[in-house]
Figure: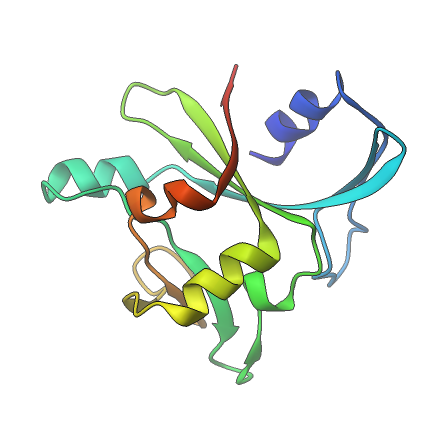
Length: 148
């Protein structure tokens, strides 16, 4: 997911830089856009459409906010990125990036009563996150990009 988003930025951004290869939560990608520094937190989800289809439910995102092992902020709460990019892979393999202002998204998630789930089914069972329906986040969407 990250590489595809990097390629997406190449046409419009300069000085593109990936996060250092160590424990680093501030951002995944830093770049200049029209002379201003912007940072991106990038999440990739290949299962969202699959689960929605299998359970005949709307597509939900999984947005991590807490490391339950350490009892500390993680994911969207630990990030300092300007933008939160959630890449969803559809059943036919099309990848779409949904771009949100991270602070706006975090505020929305905090103020609404979305379901909270652990990540044992899709992860290391060490975190929890909000599970908002994609549809409910559409008003916050800054940009939607089909990745090739």
